[in-house]
Length: 285
Ligand code: PLP
Image 1 (tube, rainbow, N blue to C red):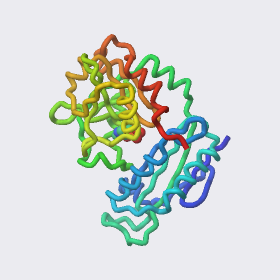
Image 2 (image 1 turned 135 degrees about the vertical axis):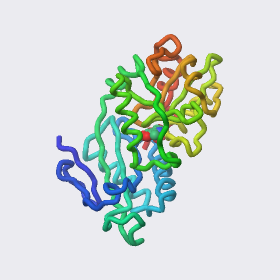
Image 3 (image 1 turned 90 degrees about the vertical axis):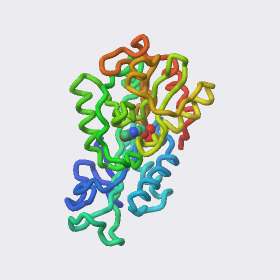
């Protein structure tokens, strides 16, 4: 079945869908995005994703091109037209099309909106989760506002490629103090020897993941002890468990960091339990 994309008011076959070469997303990465999980044909945590989108747009002074309910309808329609049962829906909004000039274009320039959706194989994801993944650490060389979900992702692209070249599936960024910030497309977590679940506070150094936010509820329901604080690479090597979170991977056990086995080198019990429980705490539309 041919995939369909929504581009500025029209649903078009993906292979013909295109944006103007002077779109500021293409010229300057001047735009924001969201990725929502689709499960059983339903969008997971759409409300929270759209709230974060509003915040990202506000921080960059890009106007919301249509109401949030209308945007929600476009997301659901794109999922339906692509017959996605399990997968992701991607939404991107840029500052629109204008003659190439660094400063903002005229205030009435319409933002560009693109939505795509694609299927992912849940069984394949489960298989990966059952053996866990390897991550490598890389210096965090990103700008100071990674709390905004912008399409400006070059350091993340290079980090993920570095991971792939070392046979790992994710890279964890490390700040100047030797503390892990987050993954190239995920948030980072460890479980200490005493069983405390640790993740970095959502300040300007990480993206406040929606999966991360929902997982905080699951952690408190399981009566686990949470510590929102930064942790060092050495602490991660010595952890009992490690895992990452994102809308497309939910809770993914990490079994090796920089080739060092974490705990006994197999997915941990806490990560497995949180992965099982996650959708009880997420909103489904
Ligand atoms: N951190 C970064 C840098 C990301 O790109 C992502 C997701 O793409 C996340 C964290 C996880 O966010 P979410 O759970 O909302 O998918």
